[in-house]
Amino acid sequence: MEIYVNLFAAVIAVYCLITTLLNLRFLKGFQQFTEKEVLDEEALVSILIPARDESSSIEMCLQSLSGQTYRNLEILVLDDRSTDNTFDVVNIYGKIDSRVKVIKGSDLESGWIGKHWACHQLSGLASGDYLLFVDADTSLRPEAIRTAKILSSSQNNDLVTLMPYRSKTCVLEYFLFPFIDWIIVSWLPLKLSQKLKISFMSASFGQFMFFRRKAYSGCGGHEAVKDIPTDDMELGRRVKRTGFGWGLYDGVNLVETTSYSSSIETLLGISRSIFPALSHSFITLILFSVCLMGLGFYPIYFIFTNLLLDYSHIGTDLGLAIVAFISILISWGMVCRSFSHGILSVPLYPLSIALMILAAFYSMVSYTVGFTAWKGRAVKVKKVRL
Image (cartoon, rainbow, N blue to C red; front, side, top):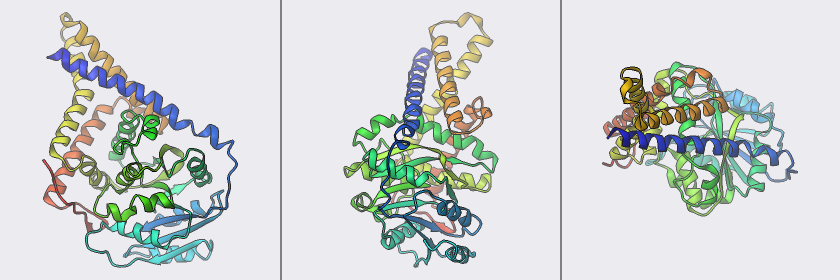
């Protein structure tokens, strides 16, 4: 039995390592053609920012947008019934940059998640040929929009989404953020997924989603995902499902986000997405957890018990365990280096996996009981499945 578990772990770990190597090369590859491309700046880009109680971060976001090298922009902020002075902050900034407009959002309609309703309202007000959804706690480097525009035109991407750099402000983020990047980069073959129209072979990031208007409308927009917590993931899947082009690229040097202010807020924020990403399925959650534990913990346990405590069991099964351990360690290290997570995140990867599994079960419980909430609003789903 042990040899089969180690064989499983070794095969999956080697797959993760190979996929990581190919994906990191692909993610960085866009730089070679963005530097050469001559950009037509006639197209208007509408930047759409839903904001609810974001007075502490929205100005930083707006400053980064004002400094974009791509200048043909309209910047629309929807104040989603904030209880702070978000509206006033944006309104004052609009006097500095006339492209910035702030709109008072209407009451949340039944059946909608709050942020999705805000994005839907913004899309109806936008005039641009392209729609860029950005979170209020996100800032962009000057070349970000220009790069996305080039990626859209040169690579025939109707949706360009960028993996952001996540600045860390609390302990839990140092463990969960590396896992998020690793699970995508080491499991999803990105170059292949862009060619295939298989919808689940995609990953999109709500901090930066750059749509051609026709693709946003053609996939149904936020109205089609109005009650799905993982709107970014589902919109990416719907783009592919409806035949449009989708592309995910490395945005570490282009997009920076500060999502949470404490470990509790981090747990609540990340857990909102985990169980929905697993299709609200208890069985999928169990399989997901068992696979991660077998990959992240069993090889270490086997090496320790059979090499350090009992020298007589050195054989094929031990070799497989070592291959699995080294492959995961290398793939995790490459992702941490590429996405600026720090060297200490590498040897502590089992703790990252354990904390993510705990967060996943908390996510299941919160949705099952019905107390999942964000920004003071309940997040409800249609069903929790076996």
